[in-house]
Length: 361
Ligand SMILES: Cc1ncc(COP(=O)(O)O)c(C=O)c1O
Image 1 (cartoon, rainbow, N blue to C red):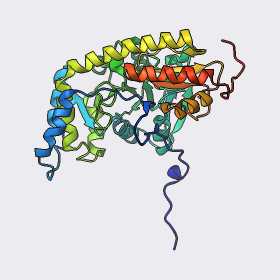
Image 2 (tube, helix red, strand yellow; image 1 turned 60 degrees about the horizontal axis):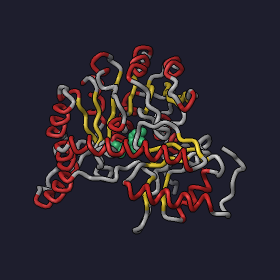
Image 3 (cartoon, protein in one colour; image 1 turned 180 degrees about the horizontal axis):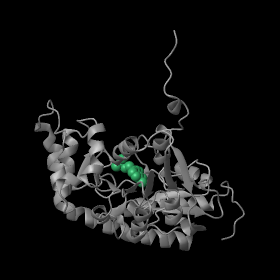
Image 4 (cartoon, protein in one colour; image 1 turned 90 degrees about the vertical axis):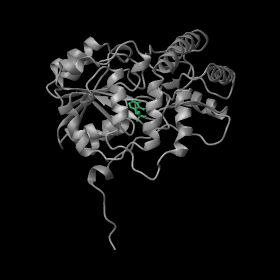
């Protein structure tokens, strides 16, 4: 018997490695950029699900949810797409727009899933070097004239924010599709959203996992002119957003003011944590407009700090990827979680069996 082989692209694929979801209690989990809070309206909607028609399929068009989004963002509902998390949306965009051998461009480092999706399309990948402090190199990206140019804004894992006028320059210069992944935009000061009416080639993708605190619910949305969204409607699984997910997302959008308040709180804490890290610990902290910080320890290796924190049940993100070995990404959690993090970090740096690199900064 011959076991059927998958496509060559799948055989060769190095899959995306998601952040660890630790089992058991007592963890301070600062590794996957979740929001530590949930809207009370989301919890009430979850409880309400017990009486819902779970034996019936959900609305395939997520009409109520899209209507609500169109009101909040002041768009016609045809410009709004909803799916099972923004990963699903981005995946569909790559599938819909990139043919074998066509080019996909992005900077490094950025969201590693772009590479996976580009590989799945057998695309030619152009990775463009960032500027100082990981600034996204807009003109160099545009110079690639890729079929699809992806930009995470703010970028993950660095937190770098690219102002909308630079995204506009990218859209202006690119003949191909520009995908602006705004999973973290609610923690930043501006969005590329107004550009979708001015340019024919921009899709803006958003997530409810971060600012809205619904990572476990899996809802993402995208904004673009209807012609750009149409291929996604053709490709998607019709019932991809479950009935409970639609209800919880809708209730959370009703609590929009709650989201703004939580984001303001996290932003303010991010600045305090960044200042304390820079003051008290030997590291470089990169400027961030997201709900996380990108940090480069200067006297210890990032790998050792990561392991020693983990032994103390504090989980941050360490990427075992070539080029990212020197960095840690730390999600901004609650005040208590950040205190746990600082307590563990000072123990780690005092501990004699965590080797230093000999750095002096
Ligand atoms: C840059 C970026 N884009 C998209 C996503 C996916 O988010 P979602 O939970 O909506 O699939 C993430 C998740 O970590 C992310 O960091």
